[in-house]
Image (cartoon, rainbow, N blue to C red; front, top):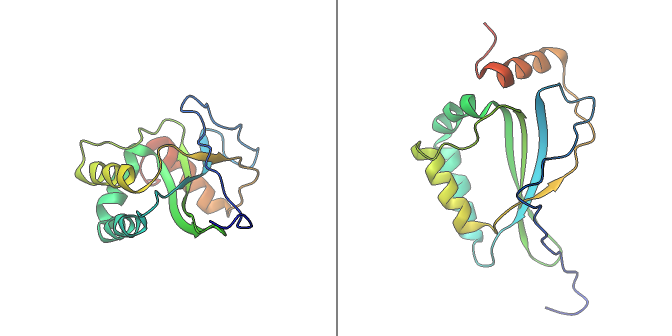
Length: 151
């Protein structure tokens, strides 16, 4: 790499990090998180295959959201100026969610692909503001509390 090329370091947040305090715009009992991790050198193709698997198995992924109390998840890819490839993961979840359940095939596949393609850990970005229409907010809060749509 040319000395004039910028270099983007990767500094994962410690595993015992309790998370940032939520801004007042995030409903009580929910967490808004934006995390990023570097894709391992040479693993861009595997990262693409991982995301393709999740897209192709969307119904299975959606079925796992209830236990996770995940109202929203989104994943992005970004290539930095130094050529490094990064994954960004946005989520809005209930604080009592279970996380991945590797007893389920889709979650086990997801976790294995993650270990293969990305560096261990995540850098956590600090949330500052969340905005959504009231009817979506009420639905997401209900989902985060109960793992199902309002009745």
